Image (cartoon, rainbow, N blue to C red; front, top):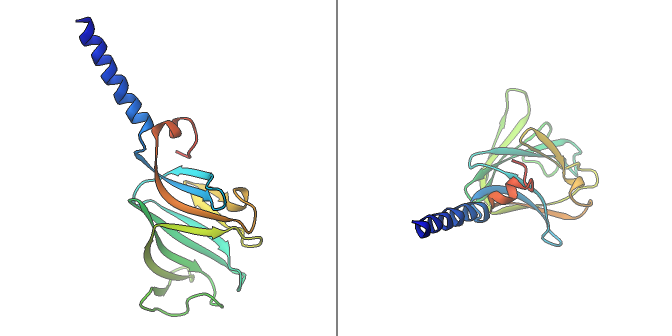
Length: 167
């Protein structure tokens, strides 16, 4: 009887340890492109969308890129901007569709799956991640001019419980 109880306790303990230590939970990781350090981690779910906003380097107007989590990768859904200019789509093509939203903004819809997205933190661009009701400035995660890479990874429950990721 005593051995059976100990064996059961060992099995339960191994199960709990496995749940805590095995990477099972999808998360958005923002990684410093220079040294691989995780600068930000946030729990995400497939289908969840978030926005990366910035000031365009040429036309100096705001741009809002909508990104969606799909399984183990990201999808560039669309870009919203309020004016045409150099470097901004001006018509629909095979790559994407340009429409005018009810609020007058232009929307370039592409729905392009990508494994990751790398952004060089701008000095003037004010790259900001709009995620889970928060606004996170990328310049707070890395110096201007440095690369940050966004990707989907599985994390451990332990990391979430220890506060290493935004829940």
